[in-house]
Image (cartoon, rainbow, N blue to C red):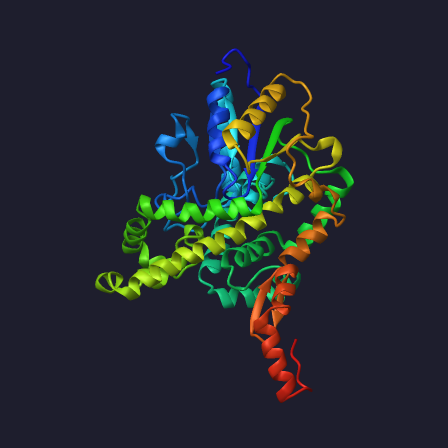
Length: 434
């Protein structure tokens, strides 16, 4: 450990896609530089489901403190990114007070951005209303509680219909079944009187004019990536490891305890690795031991692999957003590392060398191991990219709502859609829905 160094004001962020080695790299850097790790995975904050959410084990932690992990009850509503930000900032200051190095590790994009950048979250809490005088504080609290109560009593369809009325542009950016994001957009409108879509446009204008401010001036971002085939193989192997560690038993125990709240799609209930097994978990104990139960268990395993691979591909695009957020003069150094080959022999030593250079105040050489460099050449603005990536498209022919332009194009070119289109053309060529 480099105990003679002063770590005050220095912070390292490790991000990247699932299977790239974020947790392992975080521990290796922490071992070298008196580090403490802050979890930035939105599913790993919850108690339980350690195997499903792929939490680092006590043995793998090697004695390194890990903060904001396994502390939030899964039967509570989703943990807000604002709450994460405030908790993480407090912990970072406590780590600095011990002259240790804070290392933020996780693949949840909005958690990372909330901590890395200062002025991009839309505030709707009492912090936003803090300019009111003390005598009105009680009224504000009651008002916010009333908003939360109204939203909590709405089902997903009611909430989405209201969003269509008050902010159709935001409604076009979110699937109706994503209850948390739908109600979050309504909360923004109800507490601020301003549509979420208007906030985002104003924010984009501000970002283009003055750039986004880095919260901590001495920040280093390390983004991990790997060859797609390598990632796929790691993800597939991970599911087998999960089964050996007791995935089946963990899922059954969780379902027995929390099955009453499973229909409400929030928090850890959105985690990849739980919803895929609901058909199996909804069987009685005897049926779970039958061939049908075994088949449903295996189907769940295959679905985890597919959904995790899809999620990893979405995470790979996050670096575009991260880089576009700040202007050139305000952007932190971003080290992109390929972990496809010899993780401990190549990637880890390179990362440690870069962190040591960063802590010494010298300029980093960032021209090695950059598998995502082509993303820097993309021309669309961040806002335009975000709009197209999040827009909801409707295929009336297939009765589907599809998230994202590329996914919609894939659907239109798919066998299922083309088959229905061919059938429709044959039966009624004047009635083409898509």
